[in-house]
Picture 1 (cartoon, rainbow, N blue to C red):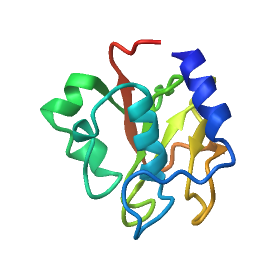
Picture 2 (cartoon, rainbow, N blue to C red; picture 1 turned 135 degrees about the vertical axis):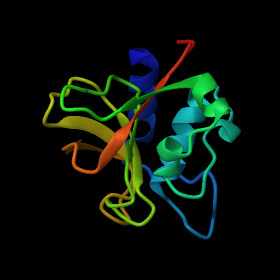
Picture 3 (cartoon, helix red, strand yellow; picture 1 turned 90 degrees about the vertical axis):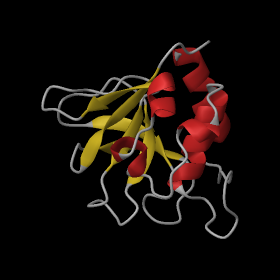
Amino acid sequence: MKNKLDRFVNNLNGQFVEISYKDAIYQCYDLFYAWVFCLDIPKSAVQHQYAYQIFTEATDLTRQYFDLIPNTPDGIPQDGDVVVWSNKYGSAGHVGIALGGGTTSKFMVFEQNNPLGTNAHLQERSYTNVLGWLRPKNVII
C-alpha cells in the first residue's frame, strides 16, 4: 500500500481535489473519495452526509472494505488509514489519510480543507477529537 499511497500523495499534494459536490467545493471528503477510488472501493461503501458519519454510522458495506479501529491511547494509524474526526472538530467532522510513522501523541495526515479553503497538503495532527480510523482491507497494490 505504501507505493500506492506515495503516488497518490505525490500526484495530489498542493492540488485542489473536487469529486462529489460542486456547490461545496474542495472539501476534505473530496480528497477522501479520491483515495477510496484509488483503492478500488465503491463510493457507496463510505457515502454519508458528514465526515464523522463515516465512522459513527459505518454500514455493513463499509465493514466489508474497512476495519474500524477506535482511537485509543495506544493506537497509531498506519499508512493509508482513513482518520475520522468527530463533529466536535467542526459541525461536519473531518477526514484525512494517515501517512504512518506517527506516535501516540501525533501523526502525519494528507488532508484538504483544514484549515478552511486549503488544498491537499501534509500536516502533523494530534488525536484530539479523533474518533478512530478505517483501515482498508484486501487492498491491491
